[in-house]
Length: 269
Image 1 (cartoon, helix red, strand yellow):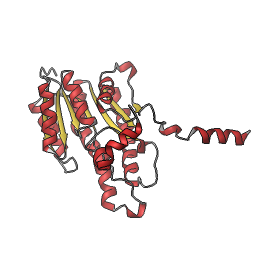
Image 2: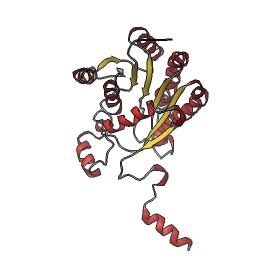
Image 3: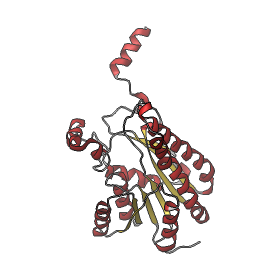
């Protein structure tokens, strides 16, 4: 199949942080960026206008990805009316904050699964057939520390994000041999995003960033370069899983403070 139209980068979860900045990066690189998010028409229009002001092509759409048929119809309409989806960033989040186990409602727990795992499953079923027919494509999936380690108060989020990681592994096992690059990106730190972290922290957001120091919070524009690189890796050296964090943060897999490590070492001697 030889489609002469401009390739599309679809971003599901196109807020002002990771999603919006990744859309800008791919538009700058020659893609038609399709930005999809659940709410905030004004913010969505603003990002699309910024892309077009820099000479790029973009389309914005509001959808509720949890509703049956919304993702499927979006994929169908893009392939029909705009161009082939060659890259997709699945960037939906489902963080409901720290909640004790017995204060986590059934609906909140289920919603986390529907947004993080089931929505990705539906997207893959709708989008991968065309990618397979073309023989190439990239599905980039934003993840979080909760996919690697569950903490108290994160029952819904950890179960949902952990399921997302396993789904990425199964998709990679089945479709990488067919030319589809699946990549799972663990964002192991706070992101400078006014409509996610900023909304959670409210008027404490700027003070929080200041407390982290220079480059102590993930810059979503810099992170967009990682997504760009992953989408364009040579297939002889594809990365399935990468993790990113500010240089001042300790990795999730080694977060014991040095004093505790030194003390443990002394106790063994």
